[in-house]
Structure formats: C-alpha cells, structure tokens
Length: 210
Image 1 (cartoon, rainbow, N blue to C red):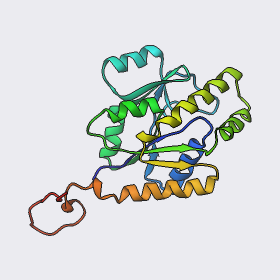
Image 2: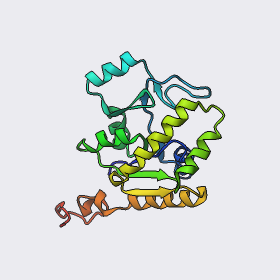
Image 3: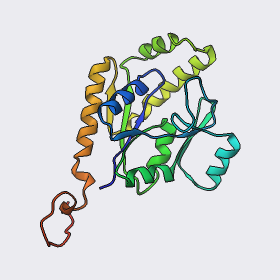
C-alpha cells in the first residue's frame, strides 16, 4: 500500500499553512511536499526545505522535459511539483501534504495514476480574509487587492474538492482536518483487493467486487 496524497488549497489568509503544520506535528508520517518556485527566497526560508528555489530558465527546462506533475502561476511567480518527487515519496509509503493553488489542482486532476484527497480551506466570510491580510506586517497594497480578487475566484472552484474546512475557529478546523486525514487513511477505495490488508493464506488474490 502506497502512501496517501492530501492536496490542500486555500485563499491567502485562510490559515492553510498554520493548519497544515499543526496536522503534520500530530502525524509524523505526514510530510509537506516541497515544490519548485521562481519566487525569491524570503527571510527564514531554506532552499530544499520550504521550496526548491529555481530561476525561470530552470523552471522552463523542467516543463519542457515534462518533469512537473502540476504547475501554476500564482501572484506572478511560477510554482510546480516534481512528478518524480511525489512518486518516490508515495512508493516509500510516506503520506504527503501537497499545498497547491486551484490552477495546480486543475492540472493534477487531469493526470492519471496518482489518486489524491482534495481539501479546500476557507473562512465563512471574505471580510475575515480581508482583515487577516490587512494585519500582515509585509502587506503591499497592490498585492493585497490581487489576493482578495483571487480569493473570490478560488472559492468558486469548491466543486473540485472532496472536503471543505471552514476555518473561523482554528481548533475546530484542526479537528475537521484530523478527521479527514484519518478517514482517508482507512478508506475502502484505497484497496483493490482484501489481500492488501489481510493474509488469508494461500488463497488467490481476488479483487473486491464493486
């Protein structure tokens, strides 16, 4: 049984990063996917840990070699997920949390052979996002306006996701996230045969009837 891929999207300010870190702290086998990006490295970020920071030329080369599982332009920067990176982690039975934009989800859902659970995080009011973003110390007026505009478009794509987490209360949202993760781990859809979870001796590996 391979690892589980959890794909998470959210508008800026929805609390996705905070919730993801809290979930991974409780479940050590769940690890953050490290994406490639062309955006500049920020203070306190580490290459290879937070992102693989690459030039636009390097990113373009990866695209031409068809090495990206999905990619998207977000706030003027390129972000992408290495297909090799994800397949290797899942084959090693690691559970992976993949943080991508709605654009990336569209591309990923067009791929075959990599099943995933899709989770969207959002507060119940756009005014909550506006307040959270306005309180950021590094807020840029133009960037702020763009993020609010993007958020209104992103929430309209909720139908692409299996689960919606409303993050008005952080602890309640975390409990929902934990339940989604645990339920996904035990989903019958992850098994093609009962032989994958129980040894019945020398019986033939018989697929489950659907």
